[in-house]
Image (cartoon, rainbow, N blue to C red; front, side, top):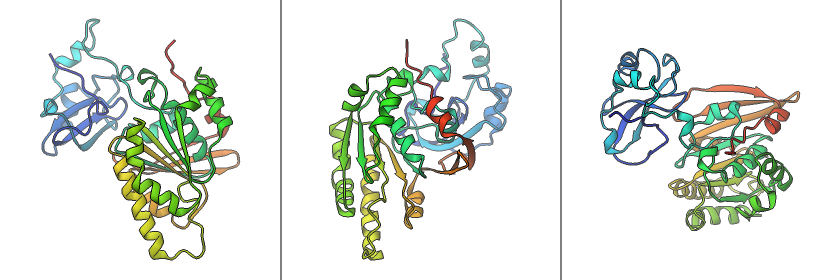
Length: 316
């Protein structure tokens, strides 16, 4: 009997294949060793995803990713259409599968799917608030859109906000004091402390604490010493980049750029997912700059909407 696979279930295992999937629910529609036209995934399903039922035209994406051997040459069969209409269907909706989210549709739609092996870089003042929310949500159960994990938080610019974190915890029905115990915080005060820790210790510390999310808050806050030579800055940034790459093997890494810095573009260029967040007239414009599969896009919202409209999705 056909199985329903989702892109975020088992990435990073096996050989690389071209995977066509529904951008709405990440349901895998077609897996091939060579690149094929999208019509091969759309036509057998009569234009609709058999995972969520959405129209596939304009909502189908392709990635070259390592997948399990059992996924080789998957083609969505005609029988899947009929099976999804029956009460005894073996298929599950995308929402029933565990995947990490912020619970805020505007940003989730720009970043999804979120998993390990990604470096997300957020720039702008609001990035600190997003980091606090992500730190809290990583602790939620898998079925509630979390990682069920502790979080390692590197505070590079003294940006951690326990009051905002506590507010998010209460919104999600968690006791702030208990939630804070699952956040391992490391504060750094110089460029060299930051580079040394990330390059030499971050990956092993993340493994020791079994953290599925690493947050590096205001990564470039200490890169403001006027006597720094460009060659030295390049060496330090390369060391930081190498350390993040090692940490990505087991954790999702979020880095924020809050204080404007002339080296911001270097960090943004290293990101798998890069989002610029600018504020004007009480509104925040989130612009997707870089993503492995998604084209550039933008959403506008208010800070009040972000603070009050997150969806906890905690099971009752």
